Figure 1 (cartoon, one colour):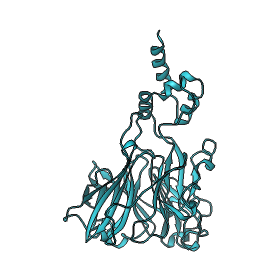
Figure 2 (cartoon, rainbow, N blue to C red):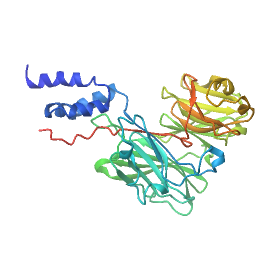
Figure 3 (cartoon, rainbow, N blue to C red):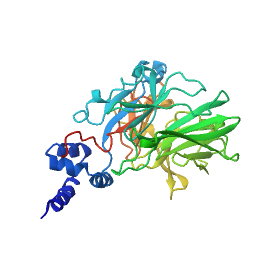
Figure 4 (tube, rainbow, N blue to C red):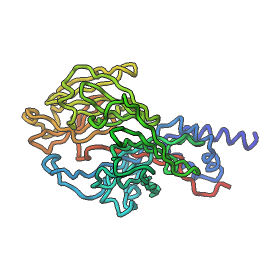
Length: 382
C-alpha cells in the first residue's frame, strides 16, 4: 500500500478519537500524524463528526445590591468556570489582556471561542467594544459605523458566525460578524460589522422597513440558535435572524398576562439542551417552559411547581415558596433560582429532565466558550 493510502486509513482512525483535546494529543505523537491532522479535509470531517469542545463558561460579576443575589457586589472582571478543571487550566482563560484590564469590561455575547465585550458605563453613544479569543489572547477593537453621529444611538449587539472555512470552522478571531441594532431619526437600522481574513474590517447597513415593529418599545428576552427574541405588548414575539438581519413575528398563546411580566428577569428565552429555543416564565411558585411546535407555533412543553421540584434539597424550607422566586442565572439548558426572601438558597433546574440540584452564584447569564477551531498545530509538519 502506498503512503497516501496508509495516510487515508490513518485519517479514518484518528477521526474517531473522542474529543478535540484527544486530537491535539494525537498530533503530538509524530510528524506523520501531525501532517494528517493538519489537512483541511481531515479537519472538516472531524468537525462534522464531533460536537465542539467546551472550554467552560464565563459570567459577569454582578454589580447589584448584595441582598438581591445573596452575595457581595463585585467590581472585578468576568469569572471563568472551566468545563473540566483537569483538562482546562482557568489561568489560560484570563481576560487580563483586554485594554485597561478585565475589570472595566462586561461580556455582551459569546459564540464559538469568541466573546463580545463592552466597556461598562456607556450611554446612548457607541460604546467601547471588542471581540476577543481568551485562549489565544487575541483581540479586535470594533470601531463605530462610519455614519454614526449624535442623532444615532446604540441599542443592542450580537455575535454572529463568520463564513465557513476549509477546516469546517465558522467563527474565529479573524472570521466573525457582529450584528448591531441602531436607532436614528425614529427608524431602526441593523448594521453588520464583519472581520473576514484578508478582506479586513467591513461595515454594512440595512434599513428596516417602516412596517417593522418599533423595537424602542420592546423588551429583549434573549437569544437562542443564532436568533434574538424581543417581546412587544399584545403577546407579540419578534425574532431577529442574526445572520440575515431579517425580522419575523408570532403571537404567544394566552397562557399568561405576558404584558405584565415583560420586563421581569423571570420571562426570557434561552437554548435547551437540544440547541432549540425555549421560552421560560417563573411566576410565583410555577415554572412554565414553551417550545416551538413544527418550527412555528409556540406551545406549552412543561409546567411544574418549584416547591415540589425542590423538595429534598439541603436547606429546603417550605415557606421559601410562599414568596416569588428570582431567576438568578440563565444557562444553556438550565436556570438557577433563589427565593426572594430567606436566601441565599440557590438551586438549579435542568430544563430537559427537571432535575434539581444546589447551585452556586454564577451571575445573571452564562456565556459558553469553546476551544478554538481549527486547533493550532505549531510543531513542524515537514
